[in-house]
Image (cartoon, rainbow, N blue to C red; front, side, top):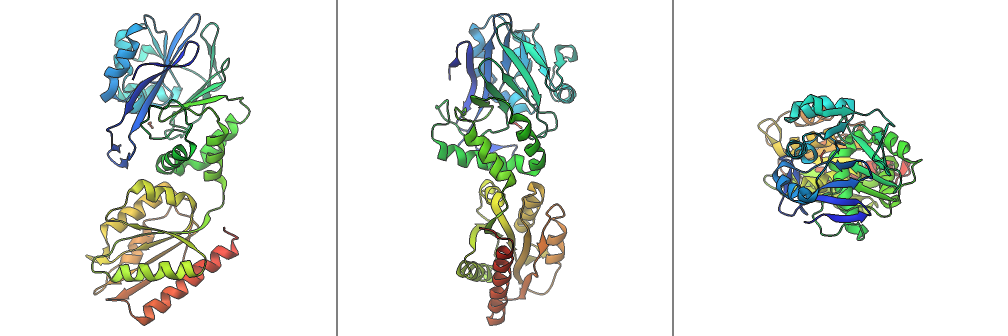
Length: 392
Ligand code: FEO
């Protein structure tokens, strides 16, 4: 891509990475992603906000080929998909200073070959003049690393937010005009990396509330010309009570657990409870993470393998524990052949979840009439608890 003009002397740069399908060797990217950098030419100083993933540095360097002078490189976040290009940019502009938070200074120099004397730090609320333009730095930690900040361009009311409000979408559209598509991608992104920090993110949203923001320019996905769209969405994902929703990740080996899962789904639906079902042998974990944003109850379905839960159920439990969703209830269902510690092991894996555990149902062998009756009771309990809490 070539640089794209946002406003006079303000440009999008970076790379649209259409082919990328996995982030951090973990997170699926069904729609690719972009690494957005931004060039601001002030009357005195020129600044580049963030860079790109190391694999795409060549694109950024080509975009910078017509830029003769660079005074500052702002690093809003030290993760390498934004900071990885800094050494290349510094080698072209050795006099440029890297601006970051005090916490980021150590992280950048630990992660990348960046000389310490090239880095200057900014306090929360500090401004840097570019001549006719002013960049104000607002520390917004834990979106999603401890060192993160945002930058507010006062004259144009543009907030450069890096990962905060981002979405993994490869698109030629500079702005988020197709809000439905961007909403899904931004929610997936929030679920995968921001949800564990939602209490801090709430404080960051409150901190940004007084600013008059005309455009949010994140470092992944399109820009937001209507910032309340994404800021209100974040507010809902963080604040709302969970929904009248059961998320049911499961795995089954010889169909016994699957029969139990299917029965529980029908019993919940009969009682007006929505269910999202995830077969863990084929699940996109991003979709599972998204469902966890809203779930009031998590039910894990697993057979017993080698005296414990199936490894894919362990993975789902690990993920749910790490993402710290706002679920209030948890249960476990499944089948075993001759014994094991499935419930004990799974329940011990989710200490971060502030949930009430509803009596699990583990059956020896194939489910029978008594099992289905117990599943009806479980559905009844879940529905009643959701009702008591007024969940919709
Ligand atoms: Fe887009 Fe946390 O890096």
